[in-house]
Amino acid sequence: MIDRIVENWLTNTNEIGYQIPFCQYLMTSNFTILHISTHGQMEQGKDIITLDENEKPCAFQLKSGTINVTIWRKIKGEIDELVEIPINYPSINKDIPHRAVLVTNGRITDPVRRGIDDLNLSYKNRGFSELELITGSDLLKRFIGVHGSFLPTDLSDFKIFLELILSDGHELLDKKQMSVFLESILFTPSRNKSEFKRKIASSVLLTQYVLQPYESTNNHISIIEGWSMLCGYILSLVEKTEMKEKYWRKSFDLILEKINSQLERLKDEFLSRTELTEGAWDGGLIYKSRILMVLGWLSALELYKKQIDTNYNIDERVYGSIKKHYGKRFWFWGESATPLFVMMSLLTWELGDTILSDKIIWDVINVITFGNDLRRVEGIPDPYFSPKEILGDLYQISNTKIDKDTFVGSSYHLGLLVDILVRRKKRQILDNLWKLIFPIQKCEFKPKPSWKMLIWDCHEGQQIENFYKTPQSWKELRDEAINFDNSDMPKVLCDNPFSYYFLICYPHRLTRSTIKLINRVYTP
Image (cartoon, rainbow, N blue to C red; front, top):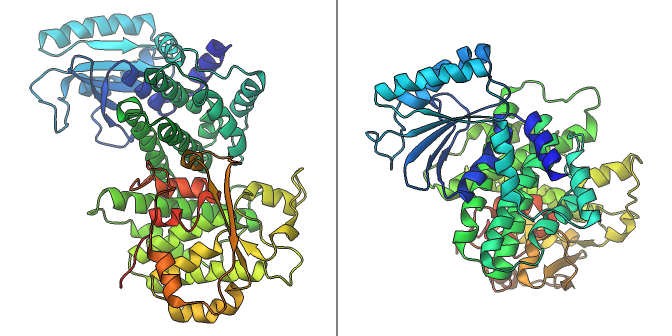
């Protein structure tokens, strides 16, 4: 069964779609990945640069479909660059001939193969390496070989696997369903730590399979969230088992590369378009929620890049888009939207626009306190409800029925928003808002043990519910806001820039503690 699933995926994907699985295969074969192409200009025919198991430099050019004589003539220039131009990478000696490999998920016709044989004689006579070939049938065997026995075996788990693969790719990813799928791969019993490495490798390939429908429709947000969930689950396994980096770090970094690459594609598409609607169905709250998701995620990308490279200049076009759309094209559908607003606030703060940054936090506090006021009949959904579920309930187009009266008088995110303003010493703003804030009960769930914070559903932990004091001491507010106790935090998240992506993807894990992973600014 899996052979047919992999074959169907491989046949229908393009070179970008199988690039990450191919890199994962190379790593399981003891190759070291040095560079992965963004498929822009100036790549000199080299999509992937590696060192092979013998430390010899290798360059791979990835193509999709059958390569016949017509296609070969079109790509011949790229192949010459692949073979003849030395690899330009800091740690590689350009005087050493590199291996050059052409990879396709389709076939290479016999006339082209004969031409390549003749071409290889010419390359060899001129001191270059011969062009090596990997075709679709080779890829199929190698990808299946990576899986081993780490496929969903329970009938219900395999059913979810198939449902994910058969998604139409247009809607938001069902993260509850995705979580069950990932747990069925990663959390099965293992005999040793080396088996964890194979599980992780298999999860990378299988995740690419189930995200293929979203790749086909350029559904960037669902692709990003799917890979972010895989990162979260890998980290949960690392935290749970105290796994050494040699078993997981390379795969984790490969997935981050994919997330960042997908975010860059989203940014390019968003900033290049003058019309942002997606067909006749788009508009109103759907349009506003989609624009919010895009700019929240792009803010996280810029903050991530700034954290890993302090010399990085934040793309002010993202900031300009926030200013352009803020106030008229965003919809706070519920507390699962809070992380998106927080990321925009942190980005505008980073660029020195403290007025807009504070306004964003002020506005969200206003929406929550007004929406969940005790005098109201219905409140704002907590972070456990997705925008898809909330829209489905609002327009009565799904089976999900949300009892909004249960949210009145409480909030999971109010406390962390207050903490942000306290760290910024915005006492006057809080004085003006306090009569709205203090009647709302603060809620927080702390998963136990700490590794369960990184999985989607956790029913073990401590539910904390309390109110601000009346009167409330500013010193107490300040001490709570600036002190960072990470004793109950997963160690793998501390000082990890992936936290920006994690807290958007897992909005119910955004708390007064976890917000300090990405925001500890305080000037005494």
